[in-house]
Length: 276
Image (cartoon, rainbow, N blue to C red; front, side, top):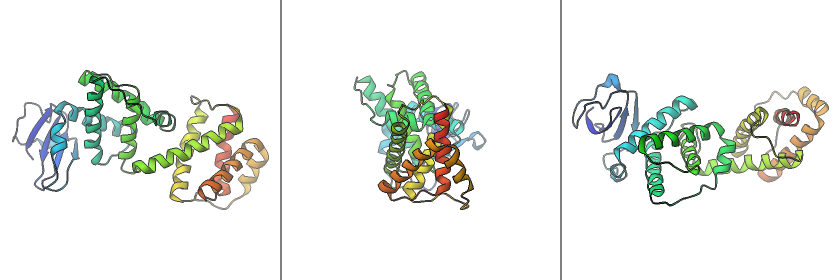
């Protein structure tokens, strides 16, 4: 492989024999390199495939400055490491394009609010926290501070770009399901949920998987053992009643039958909220 474009000391652009545009990252992979130089494969840490097919348009890639491409590559590499996640190649160009225009809007004084910021922060706290760090990194590298809402926008790109992840519309549906469940729980317990509590973190993680099962009509793997179901019903009557309300809501709204064992786990998480 040969250098097509040096982005910085740790990132270069190249083209495969198949015509695919790629970004290559790795310590020193671009150091003192110039166009057409052979790339030291031992320095390659990650390869982002940007375009497939020799006739694919190169227009978007050419309009994004080198430093933004390099920063994007580093953000994704850090996301893979810190979030323990793998991402689709398509994430690179989409995220780079977003960062490019976010910086332009900020420089022009145009503020765009993200209506999903609150949901993303609440339902994907680890991705949101990483995205906040990414905004700080972008400011350090490129010299422009991004508004808080950009953390949510970057988080959405990461959520949708995960290899095991969902498409944008799927994510929005999932957010709606989880938001409705959390709202119902708050109504039933009569107070806002403490989002800093460990019990909330465990609950929202469980609800994300629960919402995914509802959306995909994929039922909880069960053993048809009702002993634990009867125990939580007896020992945690208030939490059990709330979980029953959730089950009724899900059946009515999404035509999804909640198995007793699923309700057991909901009851236990809700009880932890009540105990907090």
